Image 1 (tube, rainbow, N blue to C red):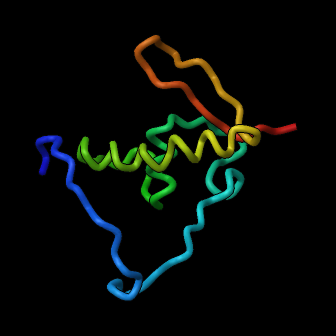
Image 2 (image 1 turned 180 degrees about the vertical axis):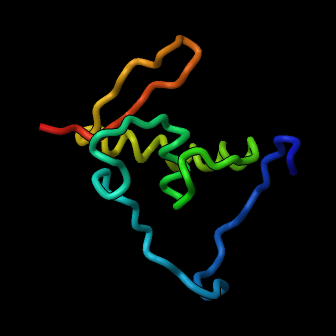
Length: 98
């Protein structure tokens, strides 16, 4: 499966699953420290209760980014953005403070 192939799936009945969980996400103030700035890669890890510098397989990181990017967009009003230190580095996000 690591070859980039897409797996076709079909909807499944809810009763086929052992458990269903609420689709809750952290609020920005629950996830980020007031005095820190984070890359989207670090935010992706934090959303999964991982250390911001946890080593991940590239495929796993891609999946986590699929969650983190919409989270950043949805919470943009509560965030500030900073330019990356170098053109090849990602930008940084942090909590908007007064």
